[in-house]
Length: 131
Image (cartoon, rainbow, N blue to C red; front, side, top):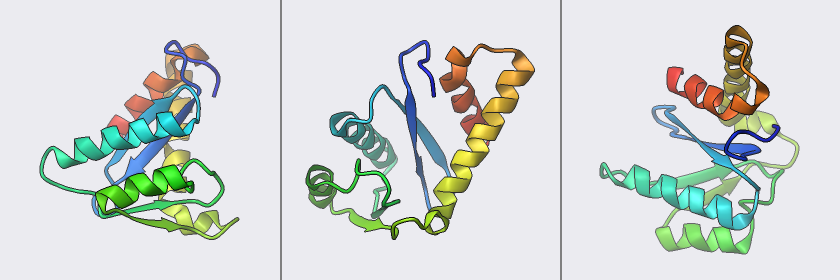
């Protein structure tokens, strides 16, 4: 995505496997520090009502999650980590489908409202909320 008003260029989603509840976080860069901060924020948000994350699944394409620092963070919190095999997006179908759904809803929102591209994070947040 292009730069937004807040300077974000990327987004990540975290999906609850049981309820399919989705939370969206926006990133300026894809650095390990920024992703770790967003995950810790999400983990503390999940922990607030008394729940905890038992496992974390990710595709094997990106190296943001499959590094020693992030694996250590998961290990500290007792979270199991599972990677899907390379070049098998169908194994990560829940997340891939949600990304596709959010992107198509975002395009519809932005076209219908005649919004400039710099408002894409707000449109994705709205699409996630509506979903």
